[in-house]
Amino acid sequence: MAIRYQQKCCKCKQKYVPVSSWKQRYVMCYDCQKAELHQPIKNAKMKKMFDIPEEFYKKNAFLRNIKMSYLRFETLTDKQIEAFKKTVKDMKKEKKEKDKN
Image (tube, rainbow, N blue to C red; front, side, top):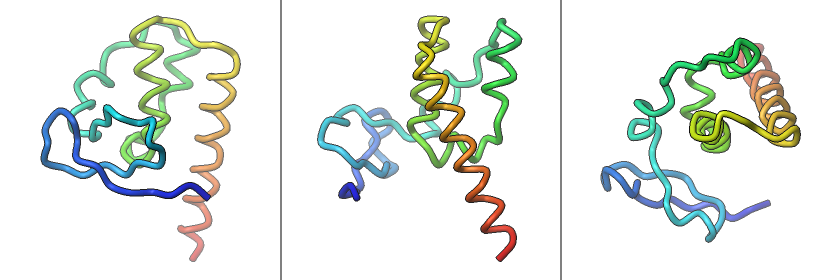
């Protein structure tokens, strides 16, 4: 299991963001990335894929990173798409288990 610690957001310098690797040097909180994440997506297939609950984006920086990459370059590799879908599936499963309890 990775060691997790908290680091201040590089943009607003107010909120703490959970970090799990020393390689993550420029971390941003969800509130700072929100405006960039809500840009329109033209591709219907990708629009459907990125249509997940907002709380998933709040909790997981990886999902935000993948969406930002798509918005910036308008393309994703097959491995990125697969990892995104797997993470969303795991988060949905985890949410259902929490709701049961």
